[in-house]
Amino acid sequence: LAEKMTAMRVISWLLLLVFMLSGVYAARRFRGGRNPQPRRTPPSPTYRDRGDTTESFPLDFTAVEENMDNFMTQVKNLAQSLYPCSAQKLDYDMKLHFLENTSVTCNDGTPAGYCTGILSPLPEENPHWWNANMVFIPYCSSDVWSGASAKTDHSGYAFMGSLIIQEVVKDLLTKGLDDAKVLLLAGSSAGGTGVLLNVDPVAELLEGLGHPGIQVRGLADSGWFLDNKQYRSTDCHDTISCAPTEAIKRGIKYWGSVVPERCRQVHLGEEWNCFFGYRVFPSIKSPVFVVQWLFDEAQLTVDNIHLTGQPVQEGQWRYIQNLGIELRNTLKDVPAMFAPACLSHEVITRNYWIDVQVKGTSLPRALHCWDRSLQDNSRSNKAPPKGCPVHLIDSCPWPHCNPTCPTVRDQFTGQEMNVIQFLMHMGFDVQKMAQQQGMDPSKLLGMLSSGS
Image 1 (tube, helix red, strand yellow):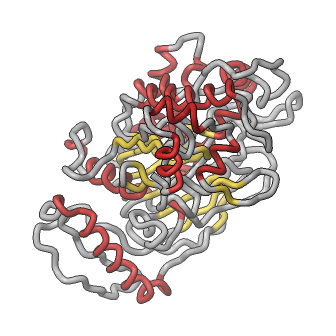
Image 2: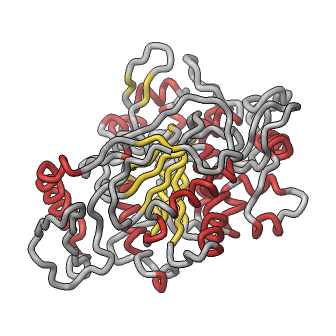
């Protein structure tokens, strides 16, 4: 175990699971943090050298809730102005560490790590958690972070995803996690589903080890899959051709999957249900924020909608629109969520994660509001502060009808497409869509051209 992390008292931790391949985990720690108890009259910002620590100044949000956007702009500008002065004191690099428990292994892979999006140490790229203590666990278990099966001579593979997470948390307790206020378990794609499966077990593990004061939260990005009917059914030869339910049914037997106990009790004998967000979510006790594109590319792929160079057929177009409707229906009772009407997959580790907005609110801002609403355990079931939205879902009916969606590129030429070009590529019928929306076709084209 290569130990080169800076000694400091832990303020918050960010544990991120992503869809990658490796057998190690990497960590980065920073000095500084947010004062957990803001005062009404904040003192002037100060920097005091105490050897190896940096103190942050408290912020008072109570007096500015009516003009929060302006206030946050000022805070961002302040952070950026102070950042160059303290940049030399930050440790940006991820350090590789191996688990203490060598019996918990994963399959071969290449170590990899991101420093963009929610993992960025730059306040202009990651305005809320840029100075968090971060741990990145590459996806090397191939089991949606659910397995508990060691490698055997018969299979030659280890499926120990759930055990890897548990061992990482145990190891981190000896490196400062024991002093943490919050552990945010985050993940994208398979990691997003892994968050839903592991957030409560991690909370139960910490409580069982004598650390009930660490609040465990989840951030599930692009892992809210549907067990819906495929557009075109095919024989189940591999995970891509299999229907979502059949793929999971086969997988959990092979992986020796462990699912949350409360969900298991609800779906005895049919534990595969717990891999689908809308089925497992009602049984989850820990706070979870769900991020989900309404037209997720991975979902469309398993549903046998392949967006190649040819325009989609009318039946495919209707299927894609219905997918958005189905996802909206499954998300309506999720209290904290961000669901743009975009065709994409994964967002929290992308450099454009600060640009996408739903109803005028960006994802970092929504996560900040969610964090504020959970600062005190006694407020966990209360509404977020006024003017601080956390339930954000687009209502427009087709992919990329949100003008802040990520850029779409033609899969063959690599050229960027504007909204009209993209919709024509998707087989968009201007006359028919205008009729559905009850407007003149020229007006609809004008709205699309202006990005509205």
